[in-house]
Amino acid sequence: MVHQHNHHRSSKRVNPARIVLYVFLGIAAFFLITEHLAHLIPVLPWLFLLLCPLMHLFMHGGHGGHGDDGDSQSNR
Image: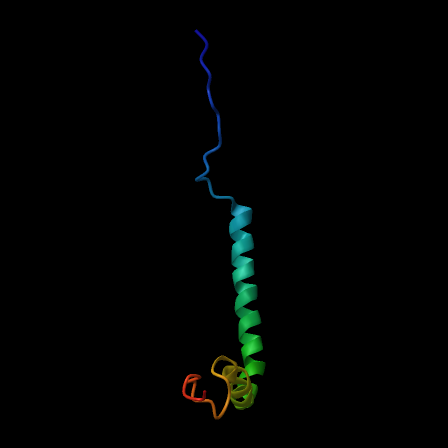
């Protein structure tokens, strides 16, 4: 009778190098986000003002623009 033994490493084992990598990436992401927010906050009101005309231009594509009541049968 032949016995086969499967000696696999457990997939639940924690790799210390991977933990260090995740901690480093977390710290780098935190500082990257906070530093970019420091530059974005003063410009934010201007971005909202720029958003208004852009939304006006691009949002009229779905209903035909100004002056169209959407009822094509009454115009015939």
